[in-house]
Length: 65
Image (tube, rainbow, N blue to C red):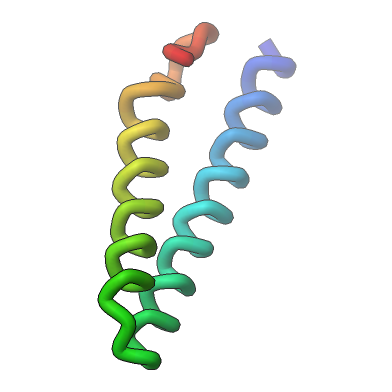
């Protein structure tokens, strides 16, 4: 059981880091008025959120991907 909890914590940390990266890209896009960077930031956040919600399935021991 501790191995599963440690694995989920690692996935959670990686998810938060990736979401932060998408947020930073979006902010840089807004500061430079670059629609491409804003879109990339939004897409990063959307993909990471979908993966965390549907791929990792928090609470189960197996992952979707």
